[in-house]
Amino acid sequence: MLVEKIMKKNVYTLPPTATIREALQLINNKRIRHIPIIDETKQVIGIVSDRDVRDASPSILDEHAKQNVLNKPIKTIMSYPVVTIHPLDFVEDIAKIFYDEAFGCLPVVSEGELVGIVTEKDMLYTLIQLTGTHMQSSHIEIKVPHEPGKLAEIFSIFGRRKINIVSILIYPHQKEDDYKILVIRAQTIHPQPVVDDLKIAGYEIIWPQPLLGAE
Amino acid sequence: MNCKCSFVYSDKLLDYQFYPEHPFNQIRVQLTKELLEAMHVLEESHIILPRYATDKELALFHDPTYIDAVKRASEQELSPPQKVDFGLETEDTPVFLGMHEAASLIVGGTLEAVDSVLEKKSEHALNLSGGLHHGFKRKASGFCVYNDAAVAIKHIQRNYGLKTLYIDTDAHHGDGVQWAFYDDPNVCTLSIHETGRHLFPGTGYVNERGIKSGYGYSFNIPLDAFTQDDSYLEIYESAFREVVEFFKPDVIVTQNGADSHFYDPLTHLCASMKIYEEIPRLAHELAHEYCDGRWIALGGGGYDIWRVVPRAWAQIWKIMHDDEPFRGRLPDSWIEKWQHKASHPLPTHWHDPESLMPSIPRKNEITEKNKQMLHHALAFINKYKKKGLSHE
Image (cartoon, rainbow over all chains, first blue to last red; front, side):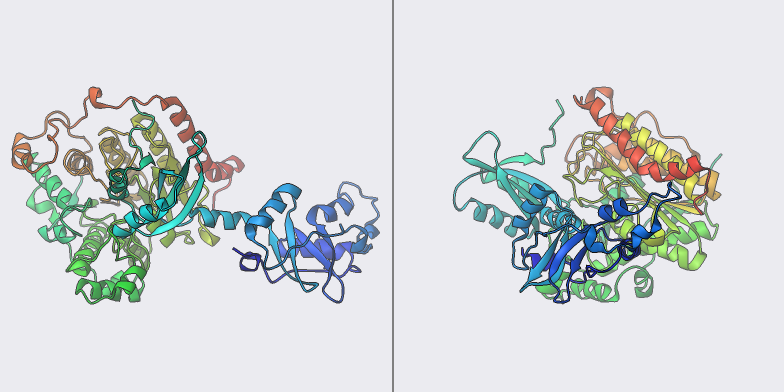
């Protein structure tokens, strides 16, 4: 999946000369957490977060605080340089940037201009979609030999039962290197017939296991 | 004291059958009716006949293009790609001849039950063929074509202007009804079900609370697999009492899926017959306390059709009728009539003997986890209580 598929294209931005007060208003009114700071050519020259802005604002407990601090230009508190991504980057790769750098958002830049933004929340939503847990489905977990042709065989068993597959995840078996765990979310309320077919075909079913946990 | 109750029945309700070996089998309704007759608590005068819901009534919830597709499918005139689009090309809800009529009759049965109660012809009414809670606006799923509960609640709103509390104790999340009223503060839904981690439909997380003005009117308590009677009933009773006190409904609709039993082949909850006495008992009590008795009970899932469902559903009628569950032996005449057709030896008593109950090693952890879910689900109500505010 590409960044351009998940990015938000309508981005709220400010010029570097905008005041901290304007940034505070934008954050509160639009309920956003990050504002890319762009110059007249739409180049991203900095970024401010809601925390940067609130840290710079005077405390509400301090009556004598200089309110004029809010009139300072935003460029005095913005972070730079900014890590940006490209619309054709893979979502899987940018997930690693979020994890490694602990950023809250990544501006998307193409040909030097800001074209979108991806937030941590967008990233998580994409991962939820990949797991298929947002759609009506049953969860089936199968231990599969790590060999060519096995997936084709398994999917044809689902196909014969006219069961639509919502999502598939594959991960290594923790103890046996030559096996994978295949997690399928299938669009059926009644997975038992296909589970029986899989067992007949010789596959070990990890779930459903009616007596797991029971003696 | 006996209550005046109505029982929706016609042999035509059994026509809702996808194919002979399909796990959703409406013979359950006939088995229950005959069991009640053998116990001499169901008479001709209690029976109300279902009617066919009109297209206009179905369209209170369903999309007209979907109703049209089901009709055409019913006559074998829908193309395979269209069937896929409407969820009708699966082994769960495959097309069968006369599907539209059979599914409309179930909806009409629930509408008759509603009208009987709201026109004060009876205090409570039971349509065991209904409770098809997975039906979506424009899609069949999970054995459900038309969602009788959603249509009936829309009908209650439109024709009587009443606030409905919908309680769903099927082992599967009541998703179709929940999404139908997700933004509506005049319908409150509470679903108690096996966690969707593994089980269909996968939704029903505790944080699904509604949206917009309906926020705070959708409650979900996902229970761990292998949950047993004590934990189940603790959660059910606390949740139902808190939610009814918070919402103060005018009418209660309950969906009584009977698939949380340890015999049920589709789910992994581990309850016994005990919960099927307590579930209607509390609904009955609270309907009288809050709604002047107005209670419509529906069926739902339940896939051990011989050993579990008839006993469980018969208890709903008995409790509606005189608030006392059946005890002791099942009638011999009923066992004799059906034993040769049943896939297992039929039970002889209303209760499950202790010796049959599975022993669950992780029982304490499961109980604790369920309690935590209850706490999260009700956090919203408790927040208002603490502040001494009403929700309005």
